[in-house]
Structure formats: C-alpha cells, structure tokens
Image (tube, rainbow, N blue to C red; front, side, top):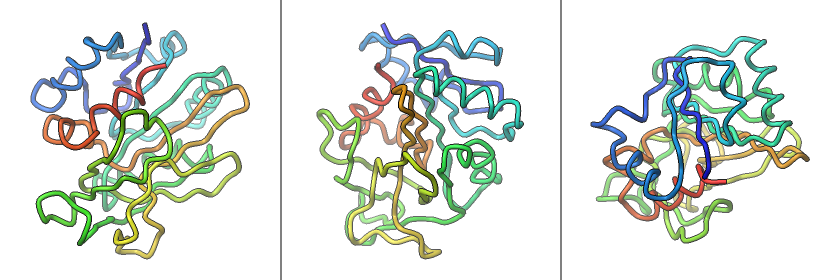
Length: 214
C-alpha cells in the first residue's frame, strides 16, 4: 500500500475538505492509497509520496534542504499551485521548486481551441508524458506555466499547439525533476485538476491516482 503524506504544515488545502476533495479521497481508499494529513514536518520521511497542495506559507532554507534529502532518498514530492500568482502562490511554490530547477510562472495559460465547455481557461490536453497509463486527456483549469531551468528536469504535461501563455512562456503545465536515486520532485500548475469539479472529467482521476501511487 502506498503511503501519502498530505502536508498541512504550510496551510495547504486539505484532502479532508469534503466539498473540494471527497471524490479524490474516496478514490484513494478504493485503490490502495493511504493518505494521511500531516501536521508534523518531521513525519514526512515516513511516507512514499508527499503532497503540498497550494501551500500558502513559504518554505524556509532548512525545509528546502529537508525536501532535497527526501527526494535523494527516493521519495516522490508533488507541489501544486494556481494561475496569475494569486495569493502569491507562484512565489511560494518557487521558494521550494527552484531548488530543483523548476519555476512556476506568474501567468495564465488559456486555449481557445482545446478546452472544456468552450471556456479557454479550462485547458484540455493529450500531451501527458508521464504517469499516463490509462490517460488520454487532462483538463487543467486556471493553470499557469512551468519553466524548466535546471538539469534532470522533464516536461510532464504540455498544452496543445493552440495553448498560449499571456506572458509568452511555453505552455508547460507540469514538469518534474528526477534524481538518480529514483526520487522525483513534481510541479503541477493547478491544484484544482483533482478537485470535485474536475477529477471526474477526462482522465483526471486516473492521472491523479497514477501520481499518488508508487
């Protein structure tokens, strides 16, 4: 059974918030994924996967060092944000992500052609390059782009050719850093791809489970 630490030390959205994440929580239970909300930073090393879902409190240099050790030890760490640097979310994500050669941009990615319900902010893409077993297309609502700035980084999710960033960045919607140990640090642009509104659309639920299961 995969053990997932859903961090709450940085004021994240919690998976036990029934209104937003009850479907994800139920799907995890049905698929052998044990998810614990963790309020004690020192406990993160006990888990296979660590999730920072819209952290609102910046990471300290000491915490960045701890996360680097977790990834070096073979853990998977996933951090998710939101578009336009709302609540300074890109800045907060980058207080950790830049240590792995990844940067969340303060932009918004829209797609006037490949979208859900005719809404360009509900970006739909089939360009999913990892954790894609059983995945055909994803819908990522209100997403920024991610820039790859360091070594051992890869594009994980990319917009279709019609997707565009309002600040001119490449429409990369998810990216990862891979350590030689097998550990991974993953940035997904939007934390709402797996909320109750989005998770049952397209292949979002399958991708979410692939991301959390080891």
